[in-house]
Length: 571
Image (cartoon, rainbow, N blue to C red; front, side):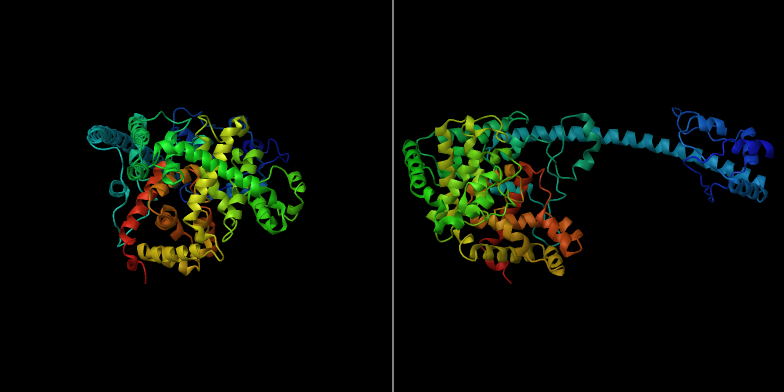
């Protein structure tokens, strides 16, 4: 490398065309490379030390570089001429001085970085230790408080403990950055505790069973002492000869344990009487009455005046295969863009389950001619069906084969689901009559409410011409079932059953809190299409009981402020 002849032979040793090439890049910090100067720099011992001791030694000749590289380099005569021209225009002293400064600066930066890292680690260790001590003290205080007070978290307590403070003159603040929970199990997790407290808690990935029911089913940690205490209170209350429904509502507001949810829902919906001695006879009578309707009306599903109703039910309930539609001559015009009823859950793809849903929906439509069957009612059967299946099984329900149940149990589940769904729809039937006036009124009330509690969100949607009816119609029609996982819907309905007019009145405030919950994401969207895509695909797949509890607390606060003072949100 010390003379031109060697240099020519060095670079042109293999001039065959091969993949890959090198392009020289010149910058202020690193001047063009001169082979002659490079040789002098090596002799002067001015090469920088390796950045890390674990890395292999840097190659000092092209042969060494080629031996450890899988790429091939093709350098033509133009590159040699360019290097020679650059070498003639450079002052050796300037280059040497520049190189020494670069090496010196690099060494100083590395030393400062090492000192900063050491200081940060020491500070983090001190902070972590302080947080551990504080959390231990808080946990001891919380345990003492729980031991001395009742277990039920009333709406007032929930509102005080979970709702966020007033900010910027708004009544409701988004919970998108609210601390929901922080890990306490492992000491290693406390290093990032200050970051995690500013983010919503994401529950661990749980089986799809728990996604349908709640997070206290299989695949999740064992029941805590607090949960066991709540379950005992429910059992004691339900074991009495006459259940105190008001006390049961108070207990149920904060969620119902899975083990007692079936009987609690039947009581709160008015399907079962509070008197324990009458329950069995009422169940038998209502179940016989339902199957009397089946025997009387179901064979008429293919009659001309019922064919439109039955066809719409077929559209909304996924069929097992297209061949099954051929067997129904009255349903030949169905457009199979189904499925609509929980298409990703195997339980609802079973033939026997689909037949149950068909019978429930058809009988309800026949008995309610004022509204008939309306798209969306099919969704309202699923929570009842899942909850009442849990009355007979303890394993996972997502992939459960209902044919393994006894026929009597399956008939009981079907009849109970029908009557409880009917009780629910009795309170919101104007949502499904002609022109759906109930939904129209609620969407308008939602718009007025949001304009008062978060004007910036309201004006932002007005700016991009987003109408509330375009996204909130589904929220009212399906009771947020298309926006939340089924496990969250079941938890939400625990509170709806406990609230007076929960499905009709309280649901409005839940929708308002749900919309404002996404204010940050809404304000970041800058066009109509982006807003609509966001509002119709809100990221709630990983939501669990904690997120729903916060949402309900926000909704209760809104109801507390506005329900008895409607002029507060009327312009």
